[in-house]
Length: 89
Image (tube, rainbow, N blue to C red; front, side, top):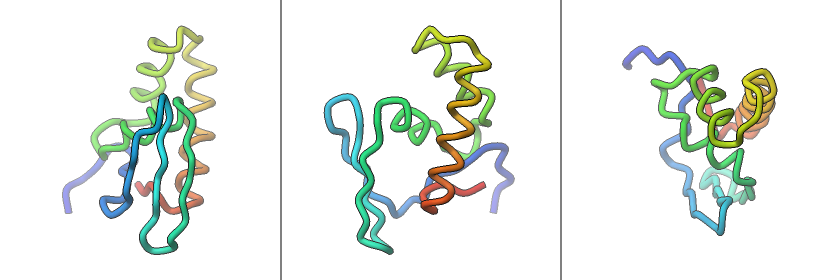
């Protein structure tokens, strides 16, 4: 298994874009999760190679918010995604 520096989304979840958000279906639990645009962006960055600070920088640039706010939001979002077992380290 390659070393990763950032979070990675599970490969078996189904992600369907919906307007500016997305629906994520976990095939293990049959649960569907509606993610807002920011959470959808964070999930899309969870490739194992991008750390949370880099994700926050991209979010801060695109949303035009201070990096500190974006980093806090990314950390909260990742904690929720990890709690639902959609993302792992």
